[in-house]
Image 1: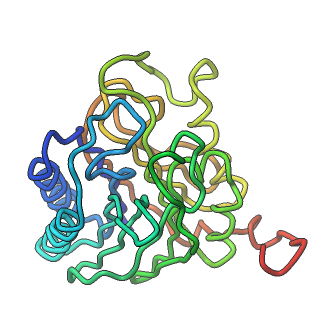
Image 2: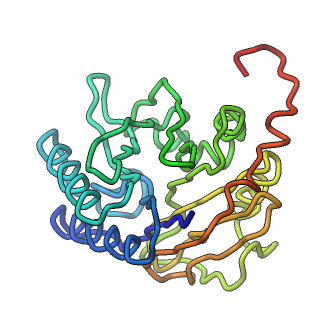
Length: 263
């Protein structure tokens, strides 16, 4: 199966952002990808960063979801669309899974917030896996995948061959230009990606914004912890990678002896 990761530039308006989403859905589908994942809270942008977050209310949420559904149906591609969700308890970071017919299959919320996000968001409370065709996958969002490896293992123990990891690291205005994946002098994020795959024996598919100064790459890590491909640093784009789902057997996740059956 070919999977895709879409790293769009920061949107200056909701309409511009929808345009990036629709274009990248079509680009991924043209490369024969069956599924494409967008970065964390792409619309309206992640609060607490140097992104100028766009105005976003319930009508905006409904409109961007409808546009993503139309784009998924027109391109015939399952889409993990990451956005802000206005729940009764407050603003949440969410990833809505839309199948290739434009039908919403479900939502994965960010349940483990970073401390810097506490003033802006409330956490979700549920976790799930999804299945399309021969692919079972989970979703962990940014901080969850970096500092809470049990979120990835939860999905792997329930059959996920791929865990998608929409995130945001870096800046669009200032920073260090990375040159080599996994550089020991770089932030730890890419090393954490490698561990999430190898400690479970699954694919880890991590997607960042197309920032000018990212602190981690948009990339796919294989079940042995090797980076298969990544987008060039500082460049928006769509990454497509063919994965062998039979190799992602979740061996180490399945061999876990849990302290209790809920682990």
